[in-house]
Length: 153
Image (cartoon, rainbow, N blue to C red; front, top):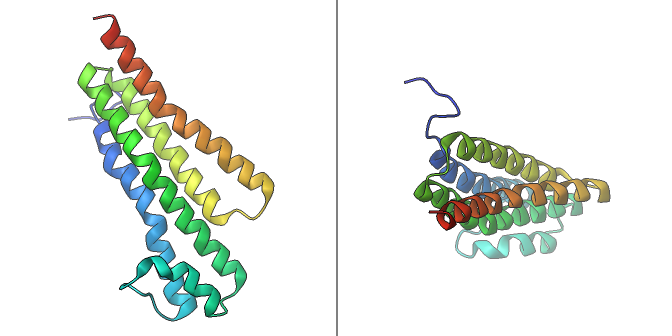
């Protein structure tokens, strides 16, 4: 079976987008362990605040906070993405559209995470926000397209 944009692939984007939301948390844990010498898995939500008491370099603490924020944003983004892809499949949006939108969403989420974790200026923050706006528009595009298909049936 050859792969093309007409192949039903967009459902694979659901676990990929989940992973894109989760991996900043893994990076955060590794950086906390390196910077603080240990990771508190008994109370993991205290790890970021613990860095300030350990007198860790403020740049590392800020990077860890951005990793946590990227992770939380991914968690907030994931349900709407999964619902939009599923809605598109249920109503029969063509696979080429679903695949194209899914690929665009994945690329934008990768860019978003990279910039969020590495940003250090207001302009980078503005670029990150523009990427977020572009990415969040994609599930809404699928919802509207799905609603229009249902409306005319």
